[in-house]
Length: 245
Image (tube, rainbow, N blue to C red; front, top):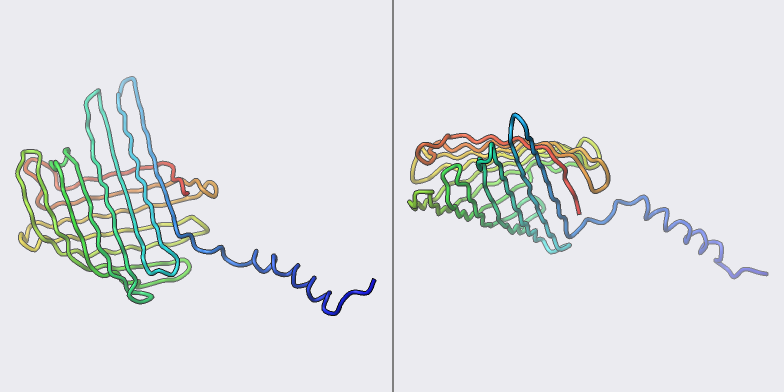
């Protein structure tokens, strides 16, 4: 049977399209959710129970220039039947692109950590973020802005102050889904020169499967003017599983 003109070209095009699409990078996800969980329970000579978990949701409507983020972090620990750690941090943030590298942001965070003397702490942040480095394997960003704080300690005393805020984030990709990340945040109180807070987090993620990975993280929280009788520095090391949705 005689084929119509162009029949062979149409067949070749039909065969080529799937191959071309397979070689392209998948389209970016508008919604990304991750959750981490770590649990330790020891009994016998030592009676310790520790549970920590966090989750993060990022929503970036395609081509809208917006990025919305929600996060939660909780830590609970008991030693010899007595609660030794109990903290909760939850917040949200909105970023709006101004250029390919520059964005404006604003966010709010709630913190409760009675073992650091904090009954409740509200923080509102606003500022600008800039992509210093944006390469396939290396990303570096810097942020500059202000932090507005309202805090109540466990004795019932209230304090409100304004702080400057400088932050940075660096990520190095070793392979697909395997990366190292370093976060740094500096918060000098503009009303009390001795009151300086520094937060850092170093983390390493190694994938086990497409959605499951091992995560190691080391967090340092430094407060140069802590609540009376409390230490200036909190250090938290955690290892557990990370689930990506």
